[in-house]
Image (tube, rainbow, N blue to C red; front, side, top):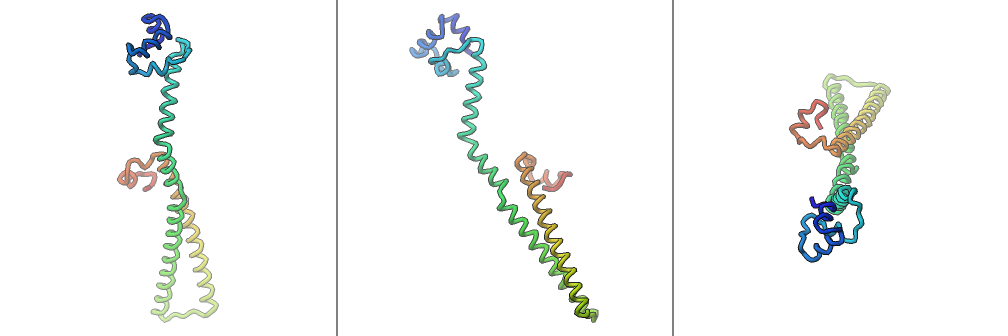
Length: 174
């Protein structure tokens, strides 16, 4: 790196360096011209100022080039559209399984020649409806928790290993 102290020994002062750079006798491979133009930097702080400039440029590059894509990815991962679809599927699957179970119970009772009195049938229907509703709510809650865990794992980079790692993960098969 080309420092101010070395430049002062060679050219005499920072202003002489600037003039030499403008004349083209010093190459600008390290960005010295931009750094020295109109700059009154204490030689003891040159490195920190140069690093600060590099960090600012890196940050601006990130904001310009990557931040929009990060925001889109974050919205995609943290969005509620896929979560709501999964919750709806869990509720529908639970409803369908309880309907299938009720139909199977009615067929089996019919095959055995059993018939319930109206009040017994009403009690059985209420119990079945209550169990179905509780199972549906539980399925929705479990799916919601799973989707939140999955979203957080994706945001933290925990799913970077792919499906094989996710399937063999002892913490859970995300």
